[in-house]
Structure formats: structure tokens, C-alpha cells
Length: 73
Image (cartoon, rainbow, N blue to C red):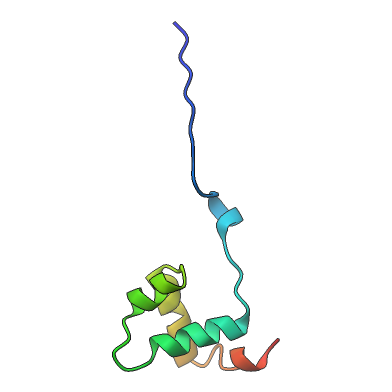
């Protein structure tokens, strides 16, 4: 007996789906997440990010690794 399996997906897998955001956009998202009362998961969801990605960006800013995001083009 022969069996056929068809797989349907709604999103691309792997790196094809990875979005590259300009530094200005990253800076704006991080800034919004640092406002008093802001919840990281809510801000991340609003921009289609995973909360852990936004948390990584926030940590990098705190450590001074991305201080010139808003100045670079």
C-alpha cells in the first residue's frame, strides 16, 4: 500500500523568515520597552518579535554595545 503525505505551512522556515530591522527601528522598539509600565512581551508582540529577542536588545543597550543605533544609517 502506498501512502502520500502532504505538508502545508503558513510561514517560511529557518532564516528565510528572519527580518532585518534598521537600527533606527530597533532603537525605537527598545526605547518604547524601557518606558515606565511597559511590558517587554507586549511591546515585542506589537512589533512581531519574540520577547527574548527584545530582551537581548535591551541588555545590549544597557551594556553600551548598541549606543549608536539611532545615529547609524
